[in-house]
Image 1 (cartoon, one colour):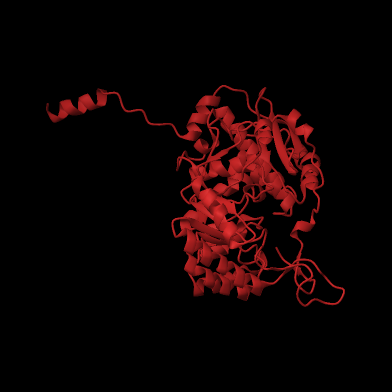
Image 2 (image 1 turned 60 degrees about the vertical axis):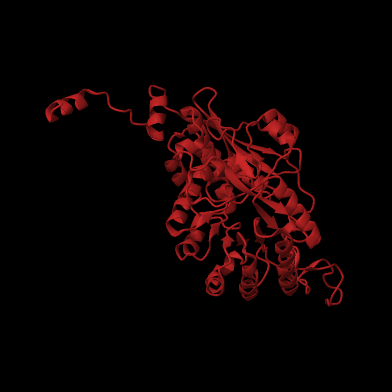
Length: 439
């Protein structure tokens, strides 16, 4: 065959089909359909039958049967968030085009003029998740496909091991290892544990505070001793994490991070309070302990100096607290540029919709690091079919279009939200002199 015949044959041959992009697939699926409008917005509150304080956003559209759900949960300000959605944000969103996610995100972000309050961001995050849920359902694809497709087959998670002493912590870590977890967070004696002087003990002001008192030197002695035990008994195959909960002073945080370097942590979380993040530079100067930060952040912009200067290794924001899927995807892109990874925060108060929003971002990004685990009782799975499942240390979504989850409102109504015992005092920790120690 001469060159001219070959060219003619090549031109006549059918070309290989070029895969459509997610946006092209969406446009093909929705071509000819009537334009969408948001027709109603509902704030759905529930305890889930287990004392949760969950606030969900339901966005209904002009297409019959098409709606989306998002998470606006905030265990400390739940009623305020629900009221903000019903009285302020919902009326602002009705009549808008739910396809215009970025435009709605930006207009909602400036809706209250002042930005990045916790309540504002919860509402914004709930809307954003609901819009991605709607777009995915309309396209017939899981949200991660719209975000660029799978970057992994499932989402690795870390488990939480606690105990009153080193042996109990070890035993609990072994249980998680037997279940398939490769990453386990090790804590001693509960939230912020290891650094408390028992009630009534020690030198205290006359007639003053007599409860369990935080003492940072006690903490700096107890926790490294715990990890000495764990590494001696468990070896180095398990990847261990630890959360400081921001409860030690900056100079002690530098010392503590240096002490923990020998245990090769997967990361050390929240060694500093958000007011003292400049001290991460000091920590970086003395050790290579991987650092995670951001559980108490509300704006992704708070990460910029930490990420751009490579002062931390993991961002720990909660997706429903910092702007939803749209902003989480942008945060992950910035992290990728600077070699930082994500470790989106869950916590025991979180809900299945936020968990799945995090999952869909995790599935589609290359800067993923780890996801915090959160298991829910079977009654929650009954109320919210399609909720993620964690098996063998990996999280799996339902694979259904959108976020892949639904909410039976009649079941949610059976479990009305209640004031939690002790709330809001769970954040109130005090030292020996009775002064408040920041969480």
